Image 1 (cartoon, rainbow, N blue to C red):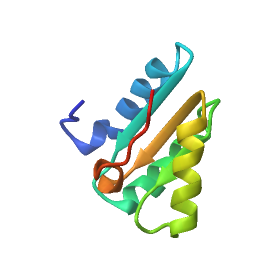
Image 2 (image 1 turned 135 degrees about the horizontal axis):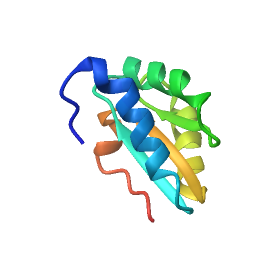
Image 3 (image 1 turned 180 degrees about the vertical axis):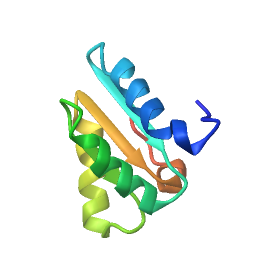
Length: 94
């Protein structure tokens, strides 16, 4: 999904996540262009969801990235907000 303007980002992401998490099990990955945006949106939107939003970006320590990746990999229902770090060949089965 490509969003046409910044005004529509928060309502659009919220709506997409609500729709994507209706059917269980689910795994959702949302890519953001920067680590700062990952962190901002994860904190901002995590209050509105039953499931926590997992953050994965380059500003996290390697151990935090490993933990986030493993948490997402093993979860039955999970939402991952990430930067392009995850687009570089990280494999998430399911």
